[in-house]
Image 1 (cartoon, helix red, strand yellow):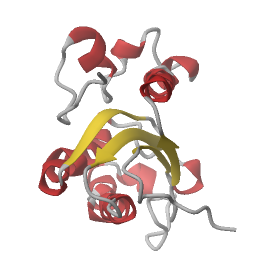
Image 2 (cartoon, helix red, strand yellow):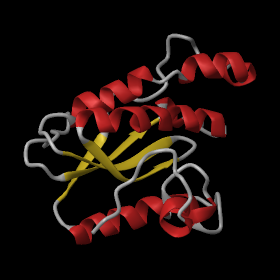
Image 3 (cartoon, helix red, strand yellow):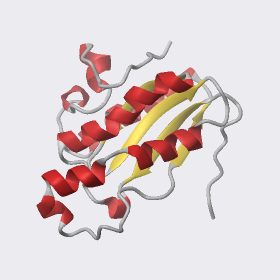
Image 4 (cartoon, helix red, strand yellow):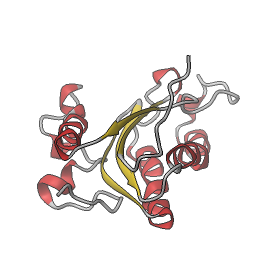
Length: 167
């Protein structure tokens, strides 16, 4: 059964999508940078904003808001389709891609969307997201994870994507 996405009310969206077979294709910081590139370039074109994100080795979390309705699914599909991860992996990490069939996708077909109705829930989701690398034992502090918005929130460090703080 496919989950329904509710993108008609103008809520913020906590989005998660995973790498195919939970492969750690985003271990390399350059690969993470490729994933960050799309929202950095595209959000302003569609009047969207990012409150926070984290690129984990095998999945991505982000909290978005779009002014217009009905944009989320198309945005996520384009994000997953337009990245150049497979080409990057083949050119720069050939030992890794040797275990991958070229026909296999980089990410799972779908994504998980959770509508966020209140500032309180947005803060809860943001804290969950920013602490994900700590819970996974990858860093001691959220701001130590270099590809995500924790550095922006805690250290005013550029995150690679223009962020809008919760208010």
